[in-house]
Image (cartoon, helix red, strand yellow):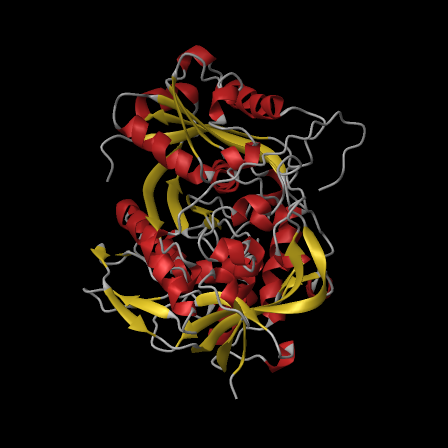
Amino acid sequence: MMDRRVAIVAYAQTSYESKKDQSREMMVYEAVRDLLEMAGISKAEVDTVVSAQNDYLEGRTISNMRTVGPLAAFMKDETKVEMDGAFAAFYALARVLSGVHDIAIVAGESMASCYPAYLPMTWTLDPSFDRPNGFLNEVSAAAIQAGAYMERYGVSEEQVAGVSVKNLGNAAKNPYALRKMPDIDIDSVMGSRMLYSPIRELNAYPLTDGACALLLAAEEKASEITDKPVWIEGVGNCHGYYHLGDRDLAGCDSLKTAAEAAYRMAGIKDPVKDIDVAEVHEDYSHEELIFYEALGLCKEGEGAGLLEEGTTAMQGSLPVNPSGGGLSANPMCATGLIRIVEAAMQLRGEAGEHQVPGEPAVALAHGQNGICAQQNAVFILRR
Amino acid sequence: MQDVEGVVELSLPMDAAFNWSVGAYMERFFGGFKHKKFLGIKCPDCGKVFVPPRMICEDCFAETEEWLELGDEGTVEGYTVAYVKVDEKTGGLADLDEPEIIALIKPEGADTCLIHRIAEANPEDIEVSMRVRAVWAEEIRGELADLRYFKPAT
């Protein structure tokens, strides 16, 4: 239980199309301007700002120095995380829970059209062995993980492709999504360019530009801002092994631990029954299956079964990634925050064409950091 | 992502050299290469044997001190066949001329894996739990480049 109730009271996303004709500052400004407009408050009413951005993705040291203006953070309490936006939301929540602040802006952003694609993640690698060897990068690591998972549980490439079919099909109904594929089928995934076996282009996230923002408010302020607050009822955050060779890649222990902490805080006893809709941050299709298992939505090795029986489909009993997830758009540092925003949109009944049926009351949102999801954050939201 | 035409771009290369010391443990690990051996290190609390060696066991928050000689053979714990590589200039995924096998290899006696490549083998012949052996450079210097690749141990 938390000492203070904190709610998501507004949200904003930019489109995830290339923003190369726009400056980074205007991209961030657009998201924060829309956020404050939705909340109907001015910059003056904001107490604290936490952003998620990364120096190596910006090409600028202490990158938030430049985004103070567009973040509406000038002359305010401000900080950033060099991680996914879900962790920025985590810190913003803690700032509001402290009682020092009542209203917090959280924003995450990056522009893949500006940074050198897959290089920045290789700079996270151990500089004495993995990095100079040059074999490991985020895609080859994910491929080794996919292979280890599929080998352990006898999962086929076609079964894994089912995640891409579900998510990219869902994305067709999400106006913000970058990769919309209404006609996608298993064959289109299996026929896409092979990168690192078993990962093909449509098993992997698209390089993306974009920004996302949400507004947190303490209970007394929340009711002034909106009549549809989305309460943060539980959170968990857990960081696993750094070295890929130390991990059991067929599972995700750090997500399991983060989920258990969030469930405990929110009083979730049976996640499949108690949760109505989930948004998870998958960078690669096999990850979503591993995440089902780590989140306790099914037993270990049964992720593909859960997908195939339709439980996680848009019309299923527990839709996962009705937005299309990370496979549909993945602006680094924003993707996990987008999951929280999308989950809140579902609870408010504001997801439009990709709104899940049944008026969901409880949602799960997940963000991750690092190669093969080294660090994980889980949020439980309730309307 | 679609390309946007007609945008004024500035190229801002960041060519900065960071001179990391590999640390005493990795120095000793590379020293082991001179004898064509992997050196592992054992956690005094949980007994886990790490390779490459590291100074602290993350599980136990304990300093590691006990060195072990692990030979140069191991088993494949996972792998991928690479058809692309990260282009060092653009960061994009560029096609490889020949596919390359990248594997998670657990040296005999270790509890963790190294990531390296397997050569002298066809991708279709690689299997999880097959044994592989290190192939060393002709002239060994006690450095990273001494370990050229792994090949199936017959």
